[in-house]
Length: 74
Image 1: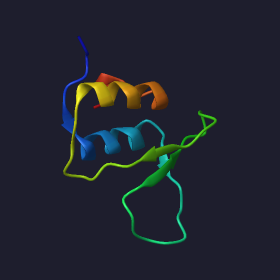
Image 2 (image 1 turned 180 degrees about the vertical axis):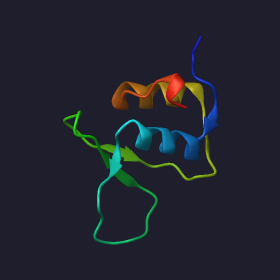
Image 3 (image 1 turned 90 degrees about the vertical axis):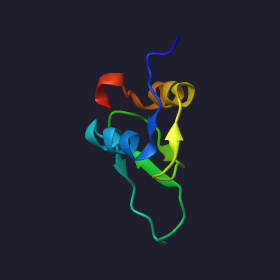
């Protein structure tokens, strides 16, 4: 059983920003995908969720493996 609750993507995005992820500057505005970077990780993370979407436990677990997010960060 997963330790992750279903939650809004807006809440998860804010939690990622709090733990050190930052949105990379983009030349063109628009589009729903955001590239996030963190100096503690050697790669970028693509955020492709809209604010009103609900993210389930399985997807949250996958996001956590790539970003270091923990349930208590939410």
